[in-house]
Amino acid sequence: MFRRRGGMRRLRRAALSGSQNALRDAQRSYEAGHYAEAASAFETLAHAAAGLAAPRSGLLLLRAGEARVLAGENEAGVELMLSGLAALASTSHWLRLMRAGERSAAFLRVHGLQAGARQVESLLEARGPVNRVTEVERGGGARRMLPTHCPQCGAALRAEEVEWIDSATAECSYCGSPIRSSG
Image (cartoon, rainbow, N blue to C red; front, side):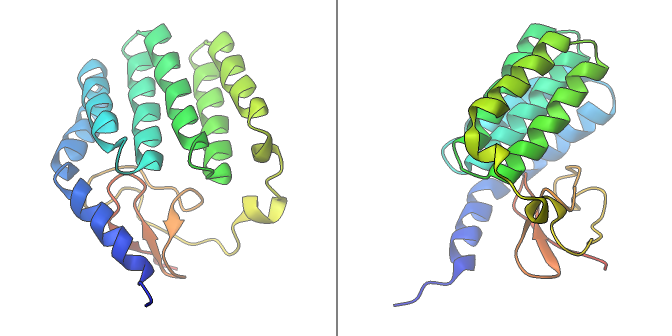
């Protein structure tokens, strides 16, 4: 008996669809500069997603950490970011972990948190397979264009970080909605 790969995706999407409005609200709070409010919302969503979709949980914790840093809660922000990266590492999505880690370290450096950036880099170094990601994997093939934000939940999209369902359709890393590329 064959099972379609999309079946599991549909189940995950259905389980997380109820949180799309909450995710959209968290994104709006973040973009409006209400960072403490956004951080709390992202943390709540991350804990809800932890049992369902660890990559989403990790990404939500990273976003909560960024919001905490921007709210001036540096120590809590760094801890959330490290927790998010650990959640990503537990899924063996090495390329996603590497890219999120590099982006997190850069974010922390820009905000004057050199020690936090070193902690992120140490975490990445301790995860051996990250260092074995090849240049071909990093390039991801032909450059595909996506909207800047998910039309369903409002999350920022990066073509090199989403999971591609087929050659023209990506899955939002936060809510699981399918998104068609434009080229």
